[in-house]
Length: 423
Ligand code: UD1
Image 1 (cartoon, rainbow, N blue to C red):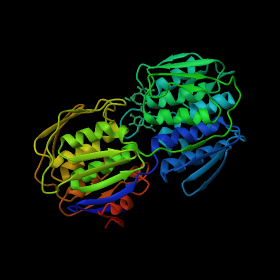
Image 2 (image 1 turned 45 degrees about the vertical axis):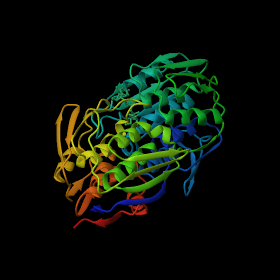
Image 3 (image 1 turned 45 degrees about the horizontal axis):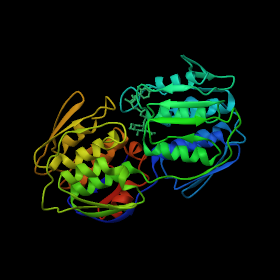
Image 4 (image 1 turned 180 degrees about the vertical axis):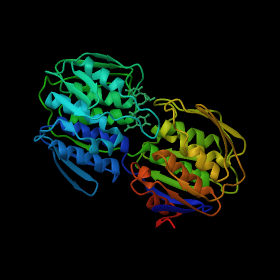
C-alpha cells in the first residue's frame, strides 16, 4: 500500500502556484453537456474526480480530449442519458450531471448517490429544484429517473443554500423555456465561475455571488461551446496556509484570490501568523520559535462564512497552539474522523456532537496515519509537518480526489514529503 511519508519539524519556505479548484472544475465539466460544440477548460487539475468526470462524459457520448491541464469536450454527440453504477460510485459529486443530461435529452437516470465519508448526503433539494422546473422524478430500487417534456422556468426557493443544488438548478434552467429565479442560492465563488462559463456558452445567467440568481433559458435549444480557466483552489490554499502556520516559516501562494480566503486567513492571523495579501498572492509568515495561540470559536457556515472544507486543516494547525479552541461543524454530521488520527500524534481534542475542543499541546509526534476523507486526510499531512519524526499517511485515494500532487507541493515548500510503499 502506498503511503505519503512526511518528516516533521522543518519550517516551510518558498512560493507555489495553487492548482485549479476541484469544486469549480466539476460543475464546469457538467456544464459542457449543455453545449452543442466544443468547449475548452484550462487549468484543469489532475484529480481522480476529474478523471471520473471525463469518463462519465465519454460514456454519455461526448468527445473528450485532454492535454496537460487543458480539456476539450464536445457534447454535440451526446446520446446516452444514463450513468451506470460503476461510474456513479467513482465520484460522489456525479449528481451534478443530472440537471444537464435531463435538460439536453429530456430524460436522465442514475443510481442514488447515497452517503459518503462525511455522513448522509441528501439530494432532496436537487430533485425538488428539477421538479419545480417541470421534471417528473422517481426514486426506486433501480435508482433515480427524471423525465420532462421540455423544462419550464420557475421560481426555486432553496431551504438551505446548497452549492450542488444551486448548480444543478442553474444548469437545467439555462436551456429551459422562460425565466428561473433561485432564491437562497449558494454564494460560493465557484458558482460565479459557473455563471461566467454558462454565459460564455451563450446562456443568460445573472446574480451569482448573491442569494438570488436569475436564469433566462433558451427554450430548449442547446448552448454553444465555451471557454473557461478554472479558478485557483481556495481550499488547497487554505490547507497550505494551515501547513505553514503549523510548521512555521514563510510561504507565498499565487493563483488564488486572497479575498476568498479571508475567513481562514483572519483565523490564522488571530493565532499569531503574519498574513499579507495583494491581488492573486498571499503570504504567511510564522516564527517557528513562537507557538500559535488559541482563537475564538470557529463555526463552519456557507460562503462567505468559515468553510467546512478548511475545518480539518485549520484544526490540525491549532493542535500545538497555546490554549483551547472550540470548533462547531454546522455543515456535515460526520466531519471529525481526522480527530482520532490527530490523537495518535498526541493531540488533545474532545468532541461532543458538532463541537470539538482542541487543547493545544507542546509537541505532536509522528505516527502511522490513515485518511478517511479528502480534507481530513490533508489535515493529517498538516499535523505531520509540525510533528517530531516521520509520519506515514495511508488512504491516499481520498486525498487524490482533491490534491493533484500533495507531496510535490509540500516539497516545493521545503518540506520533506514523498510517496513510498508502506512497510
Ligand atoms: C459542496 C462542495 C464541498 C463542500 C460543500 C459545503 C463541491 C463538489 N463540493 O458540496 O466540498 O464541503 O459544498 O460547502 O462543490 N443538503 C441537503 N439536501 C440537498 C443538498 C444538500 O440537505 O439536496 C445539505 C447537506 O447535507 C449539507 C448542506 O446542505 O448539510 C450543504 O451541502 P451542499 O452545499 O449541497 O454541499 P455539496 O454541494 O454536496
